[in-house]
Image 1 (cartoon, rainbow, N blue to C red):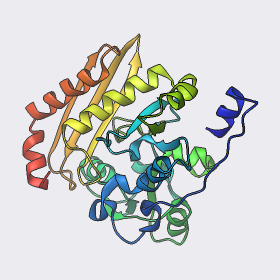
Image 2: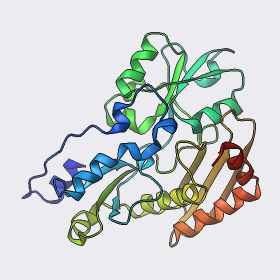
Image 3: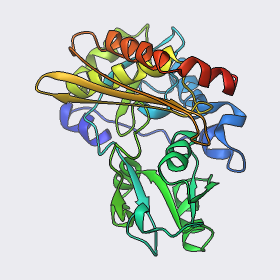
Length: 286
């Protein structure tokens, strides 16, 4: 994002403000137990409030579905590969794993889909930053791990990806693969500065996905996936809600105009409710 801003405004100085969030610091417990996705953005929002930073850049899958009114998403950039990645030192694909093989993931969404599609595999919790997760794999604690392909690619670790999981097998999280720019709602001049970085097609898809998750109280505590693609000028949106063990899953898909992506997301959420999403959420305490 820094290089894009520098290209857009070559006469301006773009400074990076390095920060470590609570989500980066808590490595021994699942995010669902310690506060969810908001742990990755609070410190950055504090920097916006005290004006030590003009913008904050987030992975959209980590941005809470309901934002405080002081903040606004002012741009969503072009999407990197949105799918999940299969990483292993011994196997090329999930299908190659033998019964009882241990797969590591930090995501209830991935866990539910693994249980549903590969019930013969053992799924184990995996926390830590990217380097820690890869180290645990290399030490033999897991036969394979599932990570976001976009994160590996952006950090120069694309070669660790053995295969990219098809969305039919592992539907991504809302906003996965996209970067969003957050600013104070009270600073419209900042929104104007970064407006050229907004990718309308990606933004429409991500807003549809987030509307699904928002309508169903999506968080790290709910195994929920939502993924939208632009096809022939229309949005094709798919979503699911499941129990973590994969024993019950509601699935739905919906197609609509990119002119009102939030309405499309709400329509899909209604479809999921018709498939039993409320009962699943109730069983999770959601």
